[in-house]
Length: 179
Image (cartoon, rainbow, N blue to C red; front, side, top):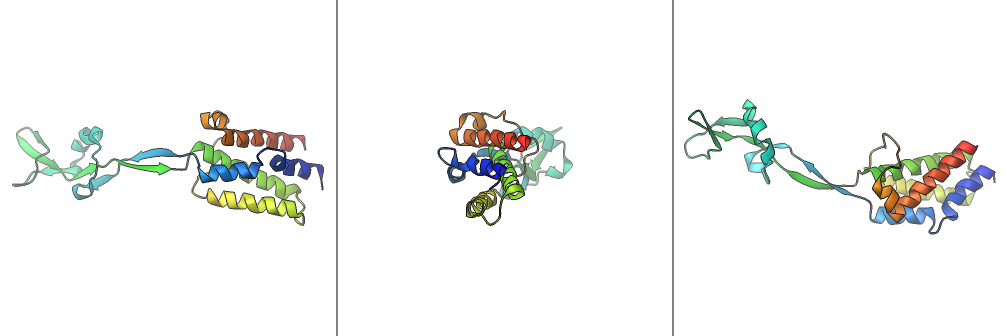
């Protein structure tokens, strides 16, 4: 087994808990954030109006019409009554596409690539680790690629599991640069 391969495999086994165990813990409770979208919808589909966009909607002729008899009046202008036909709706959803998860995916991809470049495909330990990495990357399939790698994120520095990934990433960089 080459020295580089030994170092790469040690990234997983020398850490307590093992690196891939930490990855499994992260994947069981990944970092998430609440995202807010404000799509333009028909009044019938409206659930929670984005009131901050009303002024912009008034300037858009496709979102207002003169009020007809027996229909709601949303505002008056120069003595005429108008109603909105479309309004921006506030919709919240939980997203796992966060920087810490992108960083994790990036690290796993780099780790896999490094193992494949120097690994002995016949070694059972290498194959088992590659299988675990592939499973983890697959679980992160909805997480986008990182555009710029940075360790300057509170979750990477403060959360013990993500911090272990950060430290492993630094160790991987040192292995890469020394060979």
